[in-house]
Figure 1 (cartoon, rainbow, N blue to C red):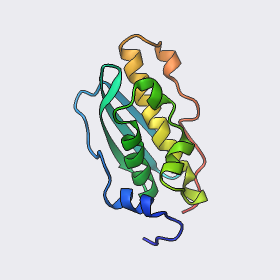
Figure 2 (cartoon, rainbow, N blue to C red):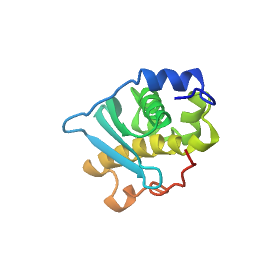
Figure 3 (cartoon, one colour):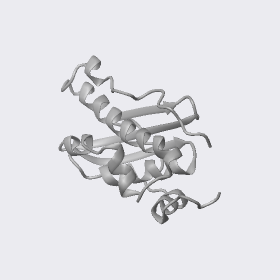
Figure 4 (cartoon, rainbow, N blue to C red):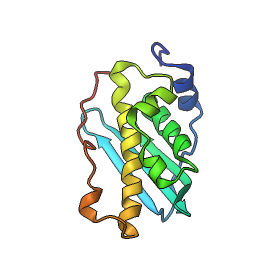
Length: 146
């Protein structure tokens, strides 16, 4: 894989991703995909005292998607759910010191999957109604050419 356009931080999280795996019986689960490029991201969270106590991800996608998943889990761990909901697509890309323009859609998946997992938990505990959990723009974000 050519390193052109990838920051050291992207390469680091791609080569040594953090928080890879599955949490059995998670408190919250988020799955988002991009049917155009085939990237698929799953995030599992365990919540304790309204904070993300544990977080894991499973990603099927390019190196950028893996790096984004790793970074978003690192950013969210230990935060309150409200703080984690404020993590934006731009925050993830900035934390990774940028992504090539054709890979920016990957940062969307990370933030979206995290938000879906939190909303899933909130529905389970009755904080929000299932129809409120439908997130904006989760499916079908346009994908850059590889």
